[in-house]
Length: 512
Image (cartoon, rainbow, N blue to C red; front, side, top):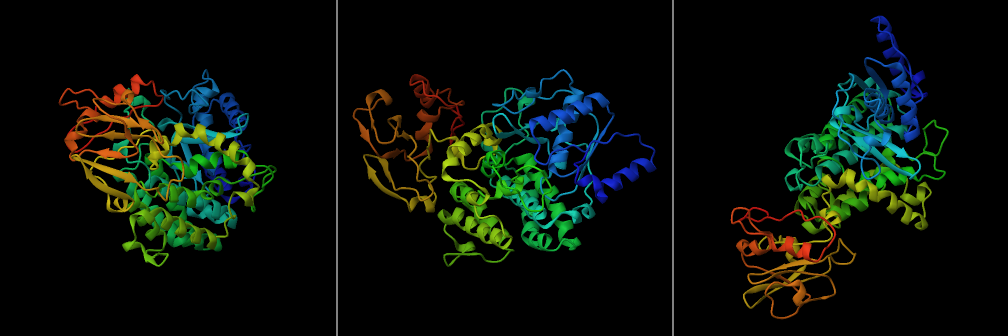
C-alpha cells in the first residue's frame, strides 16, 4: 500500500524490486488518501477483504501506514462493523481479540512514528471530526526505517512532519504519570494503549526531543543533509515508542478538529486535490497555548523541555535563566521557547493563518470534546479532566504555590485564601474542604451549608480549610487498611453529582 505521489518515487520502486527479486507475488494499492477518512479506510478495507492476503507492506507516511493497519484489522475480522473498533464515543471501542496478518511498515516521512504504534487516525466525515482505532494488535510486526527514503520529502513536508515528532516528544513527556491513572480497568484487555508518562517512555521522549532540537532546522532547510534527515527519521521512531506507551494530550486532542474542519487552506508542497491542514501543522499551532496551560501541573518537566529545546543552552525568559526560573513561569517559558523555535521554521501564524476565525471556535470545541476518551489517560493538565474537584493536602503546597496563597492559623486549622491563578482565568473549581472535624465540598461563589457538611455547626464561606497533618484527611479519603469509608464518595452519591470519583491518597493511608 502507498499513495499516488509516492508510487512514482524511489522508496516504492525499491520495494517492488525487492519483492520481484525474491519471487513474492503481490497486489498493489495506491489509493491511500493523504489525511485518511472513514470512506478511504473502507475502500482500502474492501480491497484487503477481496484479496485475502497473507501479509501487508505499507510504504509511506502515517496516512499510508494507518490505512494499512485498518485494512489488516478488518480483513482479519470480516464480520465486524466498521464502528466496532473505532474509539468511543464515536465508535464502540471494542477490544481486538484476534491475531492479525504480518505487517511491515516502511516509513518515508520523519513524523508520525506510525510504524511503532497501535493507533490509526482518520477523519470521520459526517461529524467533521478526527478519531481513530487504538489497539496493540494493529501495531506493525516490523518497521524498516531507511533514512534514504526521507530525502524525498519537500521542505514543508519535512517541517510539518517534524512538528509532529516535536509534539509527540513534548506531550508524552508531560503526560499524566502512569501511577496517577485511575480507575484501573476491570480487565487487562481493556487497558488502553496509552499508559501515561513512565520511566521507559521518558527515555525515548527526551532522547527524541534532544535530536529535534539539534537537527530539525537543518533537516528542513537542506534536503541533502543526510545526517540531519537520518537523525530526524530516528527521532520519529524514538518519539513514536515514547508516545506509543505514554500517550499524547491537548495538542493532539485539539488538532483533530483543526484538520477536520479545514475550509480552503492547502498546505505548500502537498500534491493533493483537496483542502488540507497537515497533521503536524494542526498539532503544533496550539502548542504554545497548551504548554502555558499545562505548566503548573508538572513545572520541572516543562522547564527541562524548554532547556532541551533551547539546544542544551541557557534559555532566557524575561531575563530569567531556565535553571533558576520560578516554577510558576514554567509553562510560559516553554511556550516562549517554542514560539522562537517555530518562528525560525516559518510556521503559519496561528489558526487565523489557516482560515479560521473567532466564529469557528464553537465548532472547534465541539470537535475536540470527543477526543477526551482518546487523550484523557495522558493529560498532564489534570484540571481539565478533574475540573469538578480540587484538593491539595496541607504540607504539599510547593513554594511557587505558596506565593499565591495567604496563610493564617484559625482555631487549630489552616485557613488559606486563594489568590487568582495566572494560568487559569476560568471560573474557579469546587473545592473539597477538609479539617480535623469536618469534610465537605464548597462550590465557588456559594456558602457551604449544613446540607453539604458533616458535623459542621455554622456556614463556612470562601476559604479553603486544610488539616495540619495527613491523618486528618482520613475522613475525606477513606482508608482500606482502617476499613473506613470515604465521606467524599458518600457526599458525591448523596448529591447525585455527575462525574467519576477517582479516589485520593496521602502519605499515611491508602485510597478508598
